[in-house]
Length: 87
Image (cartoon, rainbow, N blue to C red):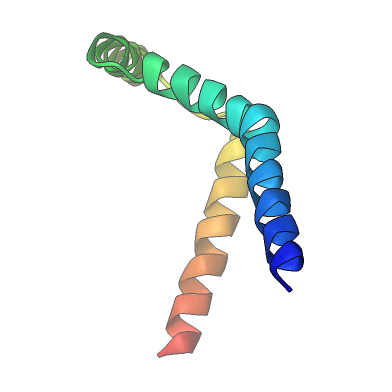
């Protein structure tokens, strides 16, 4: 019985290290990339870019194309009708 328990413990430890060396390493690198791109300076750049785009779109006569406006209107009407039905 002891040999079986030792084999199970060794197997679990081996699987853990195998996971950490393959999938865990990949996940760690992916997390590192996400957190490095989301630093304060980058988030400020993204906010500034969004502000610039909003300002430039507000200066236009029409923000949306006619087809897009109709599509969004139909979508909002559908949501509104579903919300009224849910009451």
